Image (tube, rainbow, N blue to C red):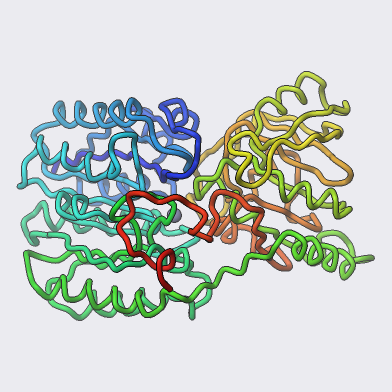
Length: 501
Ligand SMILES: [Zn+2]
């Protein structure tokens, strides 16, 4: 079998001022053809699964492009057209093929294309027709549109947040694709939605959270209802101002059967019943500062690291959710509150890093730090004076449970000590998701008292096992869960919890 594989991943925040251009993809992932195996073979990712499936089934893989950028504002139309042209040109060259695997996110918006993945799938279908099975993989924060469901044959989504099952999701899609290519099954995808924008961020930590409960029911249905091939539950990505955003259930079944849409609707009923439940407790800044102080008092005299760091998640300024990662409200509150012996990462400000590089390690510098992406969210530029304590290229290889084995880069990175708070300043907006990122900045995260992280969920996988606690703070960033702050114009209405509870 000849199988075509490509990835195009982005989570696009409608209310972020930034735009995601092709350079933003180049900074994260823009890997062409022959370079792809070197980057992804053996990693715990969808690509890693595609290579393993190819070995197992004897597929010949054709893979022109692996592209992905850090979540941020909308993808430019030029970047989207370029990426889809590289994929489509690769596909044209690859024919004849037996099947297609597309590794997507599911919440990508490009300028002019509210449903970028749907648009890509339409273009792919136009080229290959309806006989070739197309399997897609999605993030749990996907907004699955009717067009996406209609134009693919197999849809499978992560079942964990933090996302530690990229590989398993890729493998699930690949196995179904193999069955479809041999003609054993003829998969089709149906999708159901309700007027709800989110389901507890899809968090799967804690078995009594809504998502694990729904996934248990989905799993049972998958194993007992005839013809059901896989069930995918998407929490949704709430900061997407498109008509079909929100929580959804997609059922991939063999052929067209009414019971598939019935199952999707039933599972959406279960989601709907749980729409009020949130396991996220965001503290206001003053409470978070008090909690940090209490932690430090409790640990007074204890050896640093004996109990692991207190994790402080700067939830609303998390680049993995689309925020710029340069908000300063938390840092300001920590400085004003007299917090010392703490680490904060990663503040995105390449100009500050350049100033630190010019001065060198050991030098004192004064900079206007952060706050440039959108001063209306998370705090504007903050005047600080500190000592440069570490400079690096910001490159690392992930050792934690998420996307294990993949390399990443924060870009040129500076660690600056400001009144006892060491702030890791990076040049590429990036969420905290692996302890190796801090090690690359000269910090041993296991032996710190307080680790404040611009992070929502993913960092928990690698950091929580070595921590002594976790609190979340609302610093006023653009990933606010107070959706009333955002001027939605395209989202279908009414919508819970914006218009009713
Ligand atoms: Zn996600």
